Length: 438
Image (cartoon, rainbow, N blue to C red):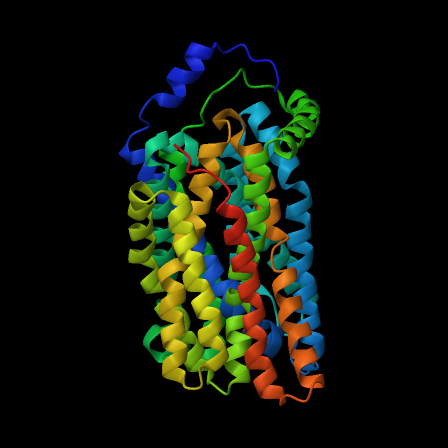
């Protein structure tokens, strides 16, 4: 840990002071702001428009490859640089400034998508990569600022409230954008294809406007004397090695991060494969949009409930309960046949998706030194970016093996989702070895 000119008493006093409800709500509203990007852009409208407009006339397989490469470039860049950026932010007191930079970069890049002409897939991919980096990079410093807006005993509640606001805000704008696309005349558009580009503009503006409360009311915590940019970079490199050493030699941190990587891989696999899985079962696109809306609006109260469960049962037990439901979702997915059953699965996912993410964040926040939270959350988010490595591979290889063994293709696809349950079981087993944080 680097030297500090701030005394231990000053640091403790700074950390224990109540930051106030205004700062807490302003922090939560950033989740309301940027979750609109995850629902409207990442999940639905960018992939749709990228295929049908910016890559019009191109083979579907090539479109999928282009989109996958764009996602991979953005994810890889953030995964590689997240720990270093966190170390620099901690050393220089730049957490809030880095968050604002990434947030408004992402917001501007998202708005700019509205101006890209048909066929310009390279330009669209570049702006999408920039927006994706803004989204993921901002989350590193957003997560790390939780220790600045919540006392230790309120971390579970505040983390859950943030995710709940994200589900509500992201779901609300997604609903408005869906109505605009399905009923373009209500919003003054001549057609759905004319309305889709403006979903990017509405999302970017939403993201930028609702980031303003955080800009105004959330204060950068001071745990040490802030370093100039050059010294912060140089000392950040040294601090990064030190933190990696601390994580590797801390049994509890090491076990938690391995467990988190496994079960969040399963969570992200189900999120990303759900639409494709639904299409493979013959469900219509409108059915998938309805299922996504169900997950969003069920996720709002459920995330708040999990915050309360975290305080009553403890975060570890609550996470393990969520993992048990995810195992049930895996089995349910392997046998469901109707669209109503798909909606039931969306409800089950909505019940636990926000809770497991929120309590994982607050559980980790309780394990780490608050003065190095950006750096530690850099490693935490790096694992999040490297998630969805094992799960899709498990599903794909299981389907191939079962089909080669003589099982019909559609049944092999159904059964392949069972393999994801292994990630939840192993992750839960490792998590069970850890104590509750107090």
